[in-house]
Image (cartoon, rainbow, N blue to C red; front, side):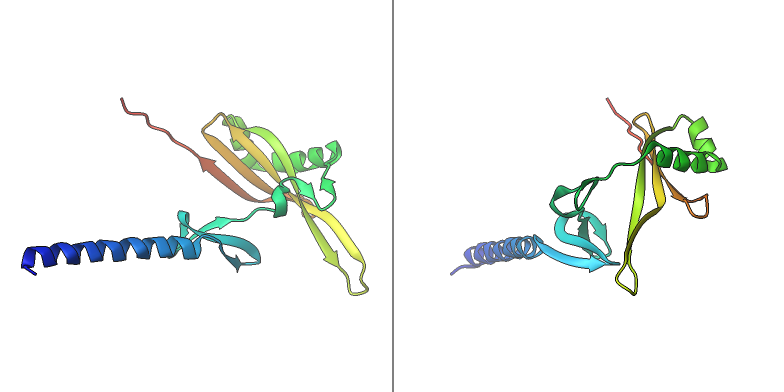
Length: 164
């Protein structure tokens, strides 16, 4: 075999090895799962990268977003008003509202505890107030109902620059 044919064959084998490695990696991580800080994560190839691992957060089972184990969770107007009033008393939240953010939702954080005697206690001792500003910004405000204060604010902004 001459050098030209050997080089073509070697190139073909190298490309085949690289392609099979990519396929094998994609196949092996397609349905892998892991638990991080008590939350289920699905590991897959394209997406959000954490360290050397690409991860997608798994939501509630069977697409139960906004539902409890027995159906949807209803939030009373009094609960919503309480969360909103606590949030509005915070100066940072006031600044967001003055900047044009609107309150879109109140999401309770429900904690269920099994006591020593087996008694089950379920309580919403905190909540997340969702804010939205046009299409450019969203904010999540964590409200501790027992301490009656805002404990965290997370602001997500989006900028789009269109070029002709």
